[in-house]
Image 1 (cartoon, helix red, strand yellow):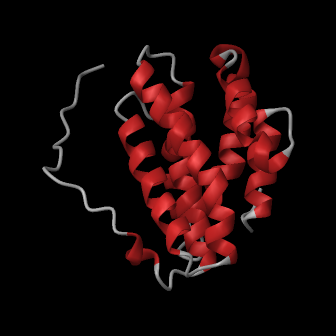
Image 2 (image 1 turned 90 degrees about the vertical axis):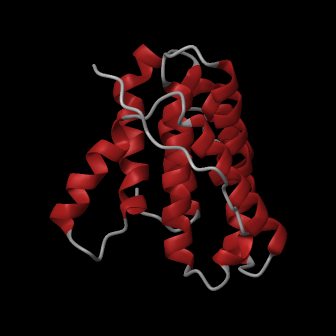
Length: 171
């Protein structure tokens, strides 16, 4: 493939107050997109230890703080940690992006405006994880361990489904 250069911002403002008043379903769906970005960056075979660490950290923050933010929409600490998770996962994307977003865009276009893209991420990520398990090796097992605090599921594809159900998203 051909290298594509993407412009980088000079500054990023991660202001947790932008989450004030966000509907729970929209917040959960956006967070699932962030989570999938972190997972797919981590699962990539590209050697990039800093991005791997960022992806795992973003996943830990998001799985820890999203349920808090959904239960207490005005919890400023939870909002701050969600913004940190989004920023961290975004930095991990420097390593790679995966197929879930590529699949979600055309499916969303077919299903129409009532579907949020994040609604599609959990079922697509679970299917993608099942399909790619052999190629990814122990990376999904590491992700399952990251989720273990919130889902108690031993396999990543079931862990992400359990997490999605816990935050009110379809699986």
